[in-house]
Structures are given as structure tokens and as C-alpha cells.
Image 1 (cartoon, rainbow, N blue to C red):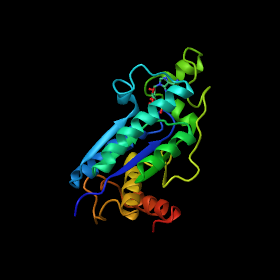
Image 2: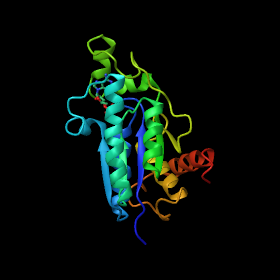
Image 3: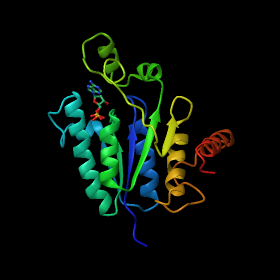
Image 4: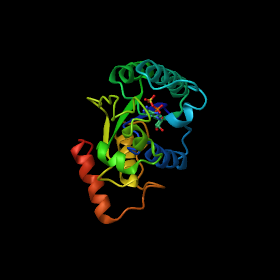
Length: 205
Ligand code: ADX
């Protein structure tokens, strides 16, 4: 059977864990033999969206461009993973409609934890007023109202969050269920229980 394309869209604050989860998920899907492309905000902004800033207009334009590419890939059977803050609900819903096979993942993490992580030191600059319009500081983030998946990266390990995403894709019928994950199968009994509990909460078990 030919692979069905879909777009897995990870939205969430900066430092919430979108890139980390997208890497684990893409490795797992690749290991299962799927064709994969990852469109990561940080990378896209160095080429496809080079020159765009962080006003609402520029962010929406960025998301529409990424959405357009994701649509082309999706209709050609590629498992497409997008990792972008995508803070505005309306444009996220617009690309959802346009793409069709769309799985929205809310990568949820309290802003305090994101500030604590501050991988690139940009929150520090934003809090010092050196960067303006930083998402979560002085710029909005509109949480999804009906995402297909929610992962909580302040209480789950990246492996657990990735496992929840994979299970959701299986549940939604985009990928074939597989007894054992090839790359996410590294957690303990306690972690396995936590994943199971989350999937039950999501209504997937
Ligand atoms: S989006 O809002 O248009 O979806 P995107 O995911 O592409 O954002 O880019 C976010 C990345 O840009 C962050 O990871 C961060 O490194 C960097 N960045 C620079 N300025 C800002 C800002 N004002 N707000 C958010 N992220 C910023």
C-alpha cells in the first residue's frame, strides 16, 4: 500500500520542545520506512522565509509559506513534520483546512519552564527589553482549542512525548500500528505507564 501523506504540525512556545520532539518522531518514522520531511521554524527562516520578522503579518506569512510547502509534500505522500511557534490560531486553522491530512500537536509547557530552558538566551534578551515582540513575553501565543494531540514537556521526557505523538498517528490511521517502536522504546516501566495514562486521557486507549 502506498504511504498516505500527512502533516504533523507542532505548535508551542519557543523552547517548549518542538524541535526535539520532531527529531525523535522523524527518526522513528524514517526507521519505519516512511518518506519524511521536517520544516523547522529556525531553518525555514534562514531560507524560505529569510528576511521575515516577527510582526503578526510576517509570522502569518511565514506560516502560510510553510503551510504551502507542507501541502505539496503531503499530497505527494510525504510524512511532513512542521515545528514552528505558529502563535496565531486563525492562520493555523487556515493551513489545516488547506492541507487536509493535518495533525495538530500542542507542545505545552509553562512559560516559566521555557524561560528556564532558554536554549538560545533570547528570553533573557526579551525580558531585558533588548528584543521586542517575543512570543510569551510581549507578544501573544494563542493556544490551540482542539488539537489532535497535547504533549506536556514539563512533565514528560522527550521520548515519552514522541511516543504519545507516534501512538496518536497510529490511532488516527496515518501510520500502521507497530508493536514496538524502533527508536522510542527506551523508557522504563514507570515511563511506559505514564505514556499509557496520557493516551487514556486523550481517549486513544
Ligand atoms: S513563528 O512565530 O513565525 O512561527 P518561528 O517558529 O518561525 O516563529 O521562529 C521562532 C524562532 O525565531 C525562535 O525559536 C527564536 O529562536 C527566534 N526568534 C527571534 N525573535 C523572536 C521573537 N520575537 N519571537 C519568537 N521567536 C523569535
